Image 1: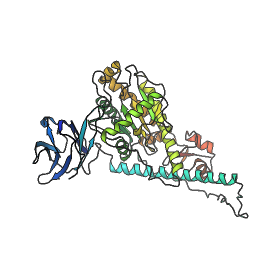
Image 2: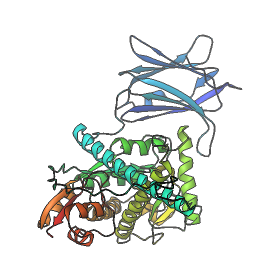
Image 3: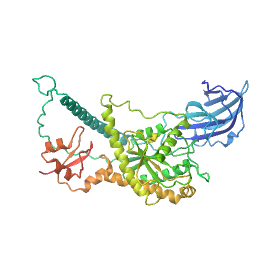
Length: 493
């Protein structure tokens, strides 16, 4: 039995709302005042009892949409000693929790009861275990490579600092010693292992949902409904293309916290995360599509900052607060690791965002002609490139009408996917099917070498006796960035 918040006056339950998700159901009581709530379970048969002190019911519970939830039936009555009793007849094991919320711009006092389903996945068709294992190996290898780069960078910084302080590097003076580089023995060329040919996983997040409708247009169109339709169409495009797989973060009318959305993308080993919105502004005039990436230094425009604050505040509707933690990172190298990881992630996000913006501009007016950056909490994943796309301003009457149009929705989803596909065809993850197809389209001009953790282009060139520039040219590499698992062609010297 768990006690809630003390009531100061009798409360009326004006309405009850229910949303069913794959891994939980949420039941919300709309109250005229705060009320004490006791929630407890009963067995044989399985039931959840919700007692509200000094409260009475003024709604028809038979209209609740129970399909797809753990609830078979809802019964109500007056309990001994007064007050309202609500009994949920259950059809599966649940783990209940509840909390109260104070009034806001949309709702009055609320009691929220969550029925979580132990062991259930929050997404439909979760990642295949074998594919998850491949992705885990790839992620671990990339993390090891990043850590090796960070260690090398930290060592270089330490050496530079020591030199600037006038410390001798000779062993005779005994103050600082730099190990002399050892001659690397010739290494036998390692043949490339069978290619995993895995799918590129796109996590698609339809913003808001459940008790959070998002923005509401002049004609009453709800943002949560529009973006879910576009997300489903986008998922259809992704799944209909060989080498890609979609993960719908929300595939129904239910609420997910911002932190949970990014965690689900990570759990499903996503290569990319896109959050779809159709926001409103204080004026009905703004219109057009916008693409946002995370900014480490704040918003790049007043509009971007306003939108970021609006989206971030939506998390409070679910009674959740906080952001992703990086405590699992190595503490000694945390600063360097975070810089390397976030820089690569942001660069990928901006690159993909540019491709998506270009495609959106072909079918819709653009609100901004470049990728904006703002502090959206849903984008704060240090290791998954992420974008937030405002498909249009639902507060604009003309744009609200177009956003309801299935033809326009299909055009938006196609444009978004075309942008994603263009990027990944140019920059496929090393273990992906697209990378395998690209490698096999090239004619071999020598041996092959699969990049291992700790490799650098210069070291690979030295070991195989070829100039670095020739190695870059043979593999269409600009700069010095390589990825663990990438297959290099070693040209004949």
